[in-house]
Image 1 (cartoon, rainbow, N blue to C red):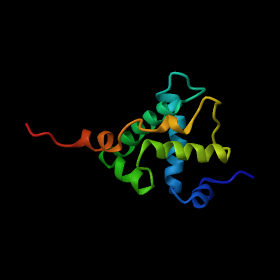
Image 2 (cartoon, rainbow, N blue to C red):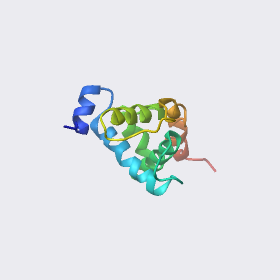
Image 3 (tube, rainbow, N blue to C red):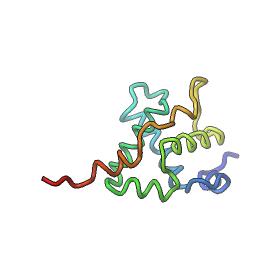
Image 4 (cartoon, rainbow, N blue to C red):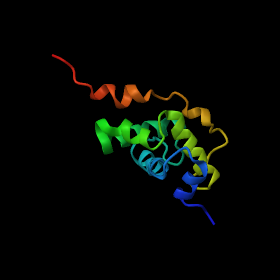
Length: 120
């Protein structure tokens, strides 16, 4: 029997179930709204989709929400994807790699700086 996201989070211990659920939800969002090839979403494209979804959902609080769930870098998105692949919630292609998620963007630059007030 396939483990649920809460079980996966509890066994792994690095991420909250909400963070894992967000990445899973973000895959569907990315395939529908961001990816040019919806049958396969690359690590970089998924990170871009997750960034867009987080900003849509939480705006200036996106980084705080993700950090609270243990997600602090784009690599964390990849770690969660690999957890879900291992637990049969997602699948991968032979060309996919955890390194596809390394340094896709800097969290602080994307989630914080764009919301800073500019003096006129």
